[in-house]
Image 1 (cartoon, rainbow, N blue to C red):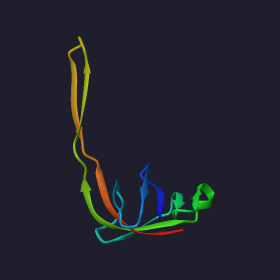
Image 2 (cartoon, one colour):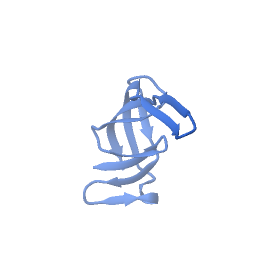
Image 3 (cartoon, rainbow, N blue to C red):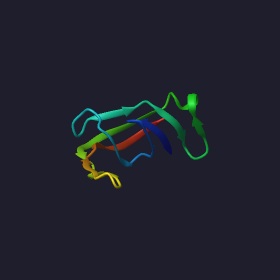
Image 4 (cartoon, rainbow, N blue to C red):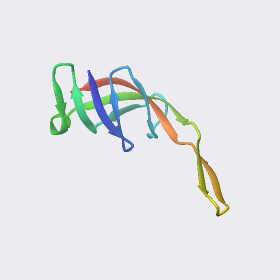
Length: 102
């Protein structure tokens, strides 16, 4: 069984037991979270999407709050002596998916 959920403006395909890294969610480690924006649900033979899957819920537990890898952004314009370097680290939340309620 799997579901497609949306959180933080991104979509994730999840199954029970998966550990995913999503954009920051409020809560400490061990806090239960529920994703109610379910786009599709499948249990192998039955597939539901859109309005049919809107009643489904995905439950999980926050494992930890962390930061992602550093991404270097380098801007350059040739012949103009223009160079800029900045870095970015995204705040992430690691979530363990416990069950899919279809």
